[in-house]
Image 1 (cartoon, rainbow, N blue to C red):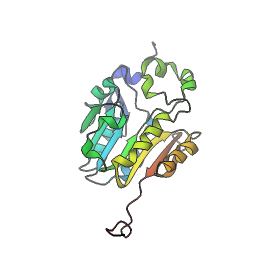
Image 2: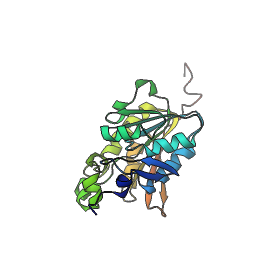
Image 3: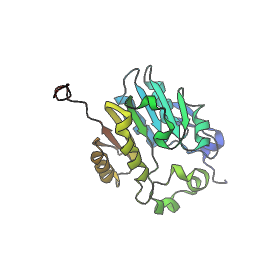
Image 4: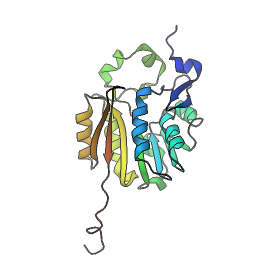
Length: 221
């Protein structure tokens, strides 16, 4: 009755068949984001290094750990409350910090799949969100800047330094923003692919780093 998200009231949300603990003030995992998690799981191999950036409660990280055998899962968020929640959900390493600044340097060039469920609501449209989101979820998890793509561009710019050759970056966006998001990926050296789920009403951008050419990368060429 007070407008608090039901998931925060009961203390959990269902995500990819898992029960994800959700505490008051933490971004609630959306069912539509299961499409993002499923795309990431399909790209991962057993034993891969996987990262859930902007992890919130850690729903994607938990799904990756559950579905990918032997995966080394890392998650990070700028919000300490989200990190505290994620540490109870993700069977891996969870860090506090701003995007890549939170990750240990040893992961540079080692990440096979990097998932970032970034905020992508344009600042001018925050007021149009349901009251339960505006009042009970952190603004940092909702506000994507003037065009909604500010955080996504920062994630894409840093991804080539952290992804392994042939690694993938995946992020959720809107159908309206997809062309600009894909163009930003391409400009930063990530081959983009746009995937949509009409059923869930969600769009995902998948960016892949290029593998070194086995001939031109030889010493002396």
